[in-house]
Length: 396
Ligand code: PLP
Image 1: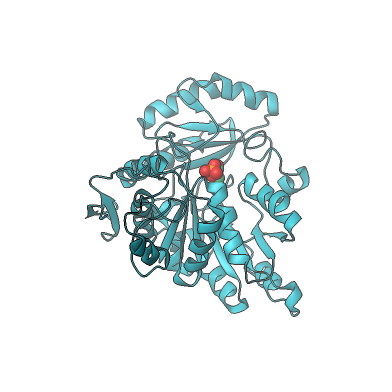
Image 2: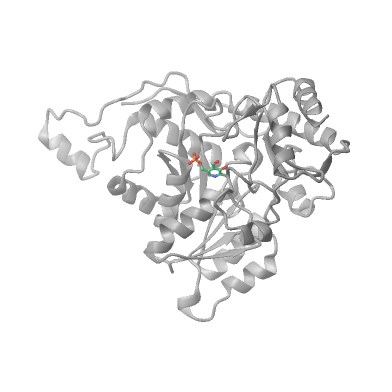
């Protein structure tokens, strides 16, 4: 079954690499009825391209996988049921023939920390958290003398959740390659419109497509995109473990991807305007947004995001606010949606202390620099004036 595809530009700035289907039939089949046993034999034996069972491959999933492979400029990809399962599956594949040790960025999504500690830890995966913006600290960790102390994977986010730090992917990739570790990058916040980590030397990219790629808050999903070295293992293990996304969710994600560059660019512009306005507000202590010349990673950002697009996420601290004041600020918001997600067309807000990072141990929150007065905005596609007006009345 061949799906009609048409190449379109991912926005004006990138080459025509996204393959966006014009029509995407949704194949709900769990299995394909076999009329000819010899043909099924050839399909199972990989001598002939075809479909047998949806856990192995499904045409709708393949269409989505082709899109994200093109968008991230990878070798191949796998559509998974959520961002978390994509992370777990990618880690399993990368660690299968490497030391079971993960060097993980300190500032990272709370559930990723819990995945490493509570899900992978009991199966013997050891994790060390490091400031990935400190290249000397990363190098020191990676340069283990004994085989038993070597790391298998360095895991980070391109733009970190929730403090919007930006690590030097080319430098970290070089360090990983020198020490036999795989660099795995969660590119959810940046999206391939801003940064393509595989082009910068990363081995594996993971997305929560629940966010910017799906873009409408109506479907969960996770995507793994990898280089050639890792793809066979990712695919082979998925045929057994079955972390895959359902075809309806693949269809919804593809429908979202049709407008992804338009939405993302608008969200970036709105976020930049919102961050600039926030910096003028007396009730705001610190604003976290990558366009800031005072940003601790400004030099890396200038190199990695040369197009002047810095993402749709803005975090800020409310001056002198304890939890109760943060809650009443959030409760006063009228247009901005108070919900646990991001990347939707609506502007959304979240209080990381009680939500995305709730279960992160207090000491770890302190080390990453996460404070109780931080709020995290996912800026939507509304008129910027409307977003500002709502936040202004809530701050007042
Ligand atoms: N990665 C990042 C940066 C996230 O913010 C999230 C969820 O918020 C995830 C991964 C997990 O994605 P999902 O909720 O689709 O499992």
